[in-house]
Image (cartoon, rainbow, N blue to C red; front, side):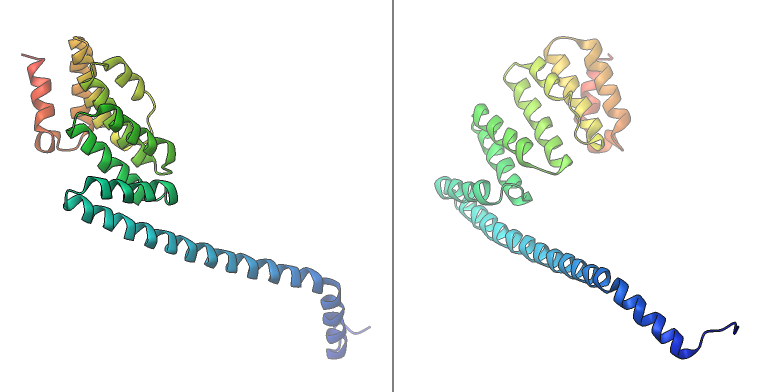
Length: 209
């Protein structure tokens, strides 16, 4: 008995193997091809969506710069209806919320911020919306509602700002002990707080003197 198979035998074994597994190989190739095609289609579609959303957002900024509030709102609604999960739609909501706060239209501001919370897939975006919503609640003399809003933490990187707003809420409730503790936590959590958040330092100092 020879220890090695001949070249012809090797060819026959390879042919038999191909016959046996050809369908499996073909299926694998087709699946891989479909996956690559699907990924490329998804990428192209996402690029197209973001390009369109960007154009609408730029138009909204132009209308806002011209103080055309009606046209600004029209463009914002386009973003809300057609591109709700893009950052452009969410930035539009933040912009409308800010304008509403300036006009002291707090219900409208709350509506826009809640829209961000409901539609954004980005944790930081939702967290910013919650912090701003809590501040609006404090401005409306609803500090307990603000504290309730801040119970859900979407992004721990905002812990310092969350604790600062908690301090504001406790202060509005005349709970100076918890306000001081919250401000202290915020100072500990925010890097270079005394430089970037001098008002926070002032709030804390006012409660320790």
